[in-house]
Length: 298
Image (cartoon, rainbow, N blue to C red; front, side, top):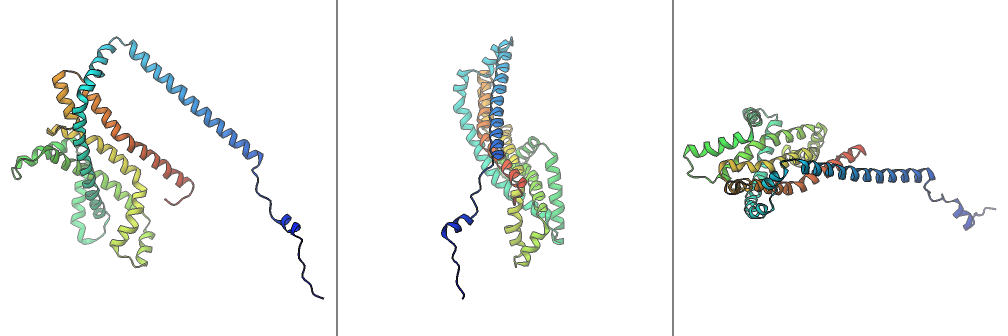
């Protein structure tokens, strides 16, 4: 006689695996790590306070500190020069935004040309190589002088605004650096990625645009952000051409008051402008490193 056997409900539940419980050893490890983190934070705070106290006491005991304080950290001249310097900073921001777009376009084109293997583009690759070699070897302030005074000297375009000439110089100078960073990123993409994309029917242009460039940008993003932060500071050099930016506005105030506090004002404004991008760069670099250590796909 054939019959079916039905297990009692209680026996069925008892056959299920018990919920995983955290062991006491793991709980002790977590507690130890928490204690170490708290200890590290407390130690960092104490060392920071001690360092600040040493600096403050050292400045107070310096015989020339009162004069330096009045010359560089005068509250009166700080308030007086702040509006002019802030107005000049707006010109720096506009130059930075335009230069950012120009550098992104020009450097990408140069990097694509230098990574191309087409025989037709051989003369262009040679020109790109010469361009990046020369521009990376010439100081940016010299580039500013050559562009800012050389182009008007030709007399072909009439009078040109110094901020426009400064923007052109910044674009030309930084495109050489950024193009090399991008070129390294393009070359770092494994050839199998290109082969796989072509096997799926993508053209060479689609492969570059949809496969190579996105992967390369993720790899070189920290280096690109560092170049952006550096360019953000160097746009202040357009003042050598006569453009009234934050640095030039500070120079004008210093010349009229014989007090160097306006330079401190300009420095603080540039720092406030760059801090968000510095923090973003540090965060992205740490995130990228964490993904690599956890064997994630970068």
